[in-house]
Each structure stands twice: as C-alpha cells, then as structure tokens.
Image (tube, rainbow over all chains, first blue to last red; front, side, top):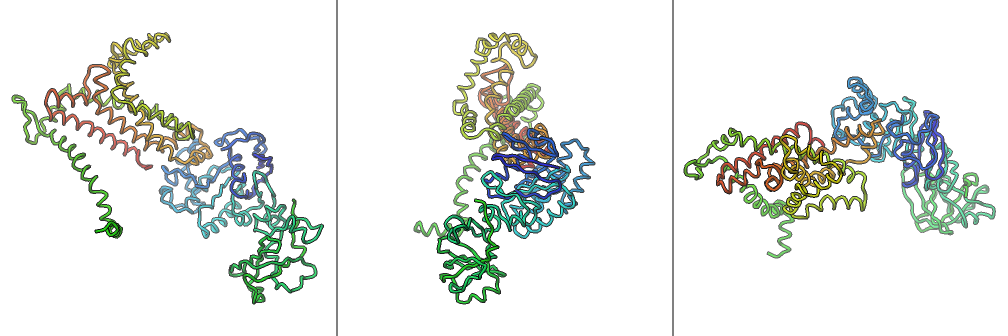
Length: 328
Length: 303
C-alpha cells in the first residue's frame, strides 16, 4: 500500500504499507480533512489521493478499499451488534450464513464474542469502540482510518485501548492512519507522526525524533510543551543565538547566587508556581524577559531546593547541547 | 401564608408541586377531552327504536350489527379505508424526498424557506382551500385548461374514464378527491418525517458508504429504517385525518358516502345518534389495527 495525500494547503506525504501513522494537531489544523480525503467523504479541489499506486481522488467511499472508525463510532442504532459488524459483507452481497460467521470471528477478535445479539445502545463506550473496530476491519481494508477513536473514553480505558490497538495492528499488518489531538497518544502508538498546523504539515518524523529534535517552535510547544526562546529572548543569550527549544526536564533550578556550569546556559526569574506531580515537580518561572518557562525537578533534586518557593528569585540552567535549534 | 413560605413549601415537597402543575390540565383532559369521547362511544351501545325514532338507552350490540351487516355501510367503510390508505401512501412517497432534502441537505435560509413553504398552506382556512380546489378541478377549471393547452386532454379523459375512480370531471371524481386529500395532509407527513431524519447523525450515512454501500443501499438500509418512526407518526395523521374528514368528500368528488359524512348525516338529519357513534368508532378501531401492524413491523423500534 502506498498513499499520497495532497490537501488544502499543499500537503504531501506518503504512508508506508503496514505503518502505524498518526496525524497530530490541534482542532482545525487540517488533520481530519486529510483523513476525510483519504476516506473519500471529501473530494480534493486539486491534487491527488493515491492508494496502492492508483489515483482514487474521484472514487466514491463505497468503492475504496479503506475503512473508517468514526469519532462517535457511528454504529447503526436499529441493528444488533452482529448486524452492525456484518454490514460491510451484507452490502457487498455476501450470503447471510457466511457474513454472520465472519462477523462472529471479528467480534471474537475484539473480545466481544458474547455480545452479538445486543443493541449498540446497551454497550459501554469501550465496547462500542470495539464494535466499530470490528465493523471496519471485517472488509479487510488496505488502510484503516481512525478519527480520534479514543477521545470519548476515560483515561484508564484509553490506555488499555492504546495497547490493544497497537497489538491488533501488529497482528493484522494493516496500515493504520490515526487522527488525534493527544500528543501522548501519537507518541506512544505511531511509527511516524505528521504534526499539522493551519492546514500544513509542520514536521513528519518518528516519535523520538519529533520529541528530541522538534523542527519548529509550534512542534516543540505542541509535543511535550517545550520552553521556547526566540526573538529578543534568544538574542539575550548571545548575538549569534537563533531560536531554540529546551525541554523542561533538561532544566535545573538553582538558587540565584549559584554559578552557571561552564558548558551551560542560564536565565533568571521569579517562581510563580510549583506543581507537585509525585515523581517530579513542575516549577513555573517568570523570566526577567517576561516569558514563563517550566522546569521539571525530580523529587531527589527538589530536596536540595529548600528555602526556594513561590515568589523567590531563582536561576534556570541547562546544558548547551540540550537546546534544540528551531527553523524560524 | 406569604409567597416566600409558599415557595419553600412547594420546593420541599416536589410531589405537591407536580400535583399543582398537573391537576388542572388533567381535569380538563380527563373530563372534557376523554370524558366526552367515552360518552360518545357509550352512545354506540344504545339503539334507535324503529317506530318511535327514540334512542333506547339499554346496552345492546344491535347498532354494531346494523353497521357490519348492511352492505351500504360496509361499502362506506371500505371506500373510506381505501382512500385513507391511498392518500397515506401518496403523501409518504411525495414527502420522503422533500423531508430528506429539508433535513439533510438544505441549510440556513433554504431550510427556513422550506419549513415556511410546507406550513404556509396550513395558515389559510381549510374551507377556502377546499372550495378553491373545486374550482381548480372543475370541468372549465385551470387544470382542464392547462391539460388542453399541453395537448394532454386525451390523458385526462382516459383517467376520468377509469372505472370506479373516474367521473364527468376531476371535481366530481375520486381522483379529484384524492388530489385534494393529498394536498391537505401533506404537511402532516413532511414535518414528522423531517424531524425524524434530522435526528439521524451524518456519520451514520458516511459509515454506510465507508463500508461499501451504494447510495441506494444506504437509503434502504439506514435512512429509511431510521425515518420509519417519522413515517409512522405522519401516516397516523394522514390516515386518521382522511378517515374522519367529511368536508372534502362533500365538496369535491363522486357522490358516494364516506365515514365522516355518514357520522354527520346520522347525528344530524337522520337523528340516529347511536349509528353515528358506531361509525365514529370505526376510525378508532382501524387506527388501532394500523398501529398494531406498524409495531409488529418494528416501526417504533428505533424510538
């Protein structure tokens, strides 16, 4: 499988066969439009959608070998769970006995073997999610599109489903294209992530590269909310210093009078908040230049910071090599 | 007791508050609304004395026996029933595309325009519309004139020559009566149907297409079943309104009696209240049968 999408704003990328591909971005960034173009619900004004080397730009959804798991699951309320799952084969003319057999197998696959005769309204959110998954997978699509499929689930269930989805994708070897606004979800599940902003792709990279080497300030902020130094603030570290990003966990909090380590950079400011997270605390510091930066301090390190608290002046320091240069 | 104390009293006792809200309308509903209906129905179990023309107030099934054994009465029931079914089916067929457009495709001004357009005829007098239709359908009326201009007079004549439903002109045939009935009750079909279709999420239609259903299959498997509660609600209106109407059959159409006209004649000039009451039970029974059939076919499953 090979997909190539070119949407609204000169977006172009290729998805590899068997890949778990995530489209990440805030609402209105164009990620869902891209998904709808691949599914065929929207047609491109210009450009092409290629599927397995064939141009499917003007092929209606019912003739594309692509299936979708909808954000609201879109289960048919007037059909049983089994009928919902068997819908794909049914409209393609598969006989009743065969399609029921296959629907049962799909329900087994998502561990809902016993729920076939119930109505979707009688199921929990997590169970509906699985039915939607089984219904989309029964047609053996080349690509499975998932539109914020975990958005409606509570945190614990979402984490379970993340593991399950990833396992299912490995077992079936189907290409998954996953739309989400949750960066944690994208990082933990995807092989590659495309970060969308204002109808364009800001960066397309593997999760680790995205986190450690964000290309733009937007990506640095959106993925793992890094601290950004640009414009005036960047110049204050030296004439030749361009915009850079620095992760909160790479910043040390020191007393204002402490010396900056030889290979490091530093900035001073006033502590505005300290949020305790258990293993670490997030210190929010208002720099003298005006920006609010955050530093992640481990439990161990925070014991050494006795006497420093909200309202006190501190020095933030970080190793020079932890600063990631950003494209302007 | 001050207003404040009264407020506190009812706030702390929600059942009293509910009772205060419900008792007056329930009294009205129970006595005036249902009470008069049951009083009417009770009349059907009396009979009229053939010699004195007085109502004999003893429970009897004699009036019902008269209703179901006299061929003329059975003709009236069958004629009305066939007309009601035909009108309901025609309304459903015409309303479905319009309601689909209103609920699924039109937006903003267009949607408002359609809703006003559907309801506008209901703002004028019913009688005015019926008499206007008599003129439109008359032998020298605009419809006959238009068909002549279009060279379709032979088609119109062929339709009017049809046995059973034809007549000397549209305004004195069952075809004309059917047209007027459909015109009158169409809004009552469109509105509930559009309301039912509005509630169908767009993602269901996309999901159907996504799984490989062509538009016709999506319509048959998803849109239609989910519109059924609306069609059922609308058809109860068109069906019962046709069963009970007596003005349209007396102004437009062939001379045969309809149930509504029979009720009117029996309780008025003939003075046979028991038979009029028995006739008015017929639509109630027919609608009850209709709803049972609709329920058996799962019309209300998606509610």
